[in-house]
Image 1 (cartoon, rainbow, N blue to C red):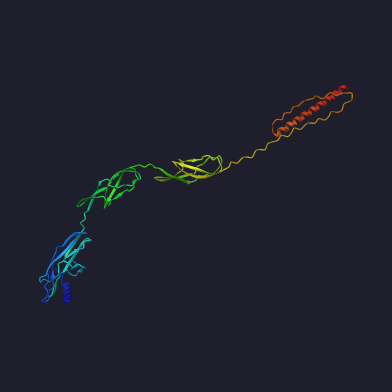
Image 2 (cartoon, helix red, strand yellow):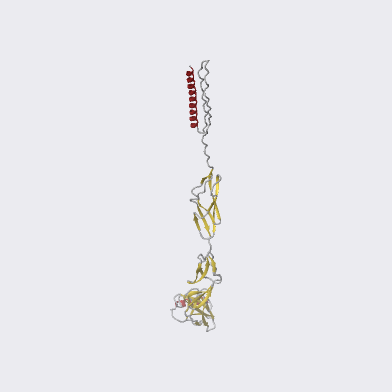
Length: 369
């Protein structure tokens, strides 16, 4: 019977018209008297704050008081949704997001004569964003390190900024965005610090870093890679790829090669040197060809002239001996054509002497007759 009376009372509460103030359900004849209920003031707080709302109730007949909180859907104390486990005189309102929510509490007085309930007036809980608005920032302390070499990474140890808001200021050293992270430009370099949409700057000094060759390799071979022993290396078309601490580039001059003259045949390794680094490539070297010797002319022996004997003379006449001419022939070192000509000249000279001897013999014979 008691449970039926409580259910009937709650139904009647939900059917009442909306209006400010607390409303009591009419007690049954000879039943329990409704409690007296007082509500707290509306609450304003920030996001995440603790907001406690409450009702204060009294039982005129010494009955037992019970509480049930509801969230209002329209800002009134009717037609709300029941909040589970919210059954005490206090309630911790939700402050997780901005906005206004309304709450009310149904207070029930129960006794041996039954129960009577009263709906409290709605309580507004307004959640506002009370965070300070940042108006600007500035560097409070510089980083410990402000001297760098080109290519170093920025160090932010010791850096802090002061944040100015509409409610004052505060200092921070974490959550900062700093750029550039790598210092690639020599000289005085500006560093930008950002925090929640605001920015400020400071400067550091960057020393220029000398470019150092780290490695070299052959990018393209020379146009000529075949040689003969004794030839000089031709580097036309040779390209070297140079890798430094700053860049990668191809060069076609400024390097040295060894050897420059090929003295042996076969596959030869050529070493390229550039600023303390070296690389190699190979060429083929052939033997030098030897020319065939010219033929040597052999001189033919000079022919020997043969003189026919003189005709026989009479027994009483003794012919005078023919004059004797001694011809010394020197064999010069000439070509075969010159030797032949000399031989003809000698032959004609011998024939002339023979003819002269015959002529003298004939004349002498005629004079004797």
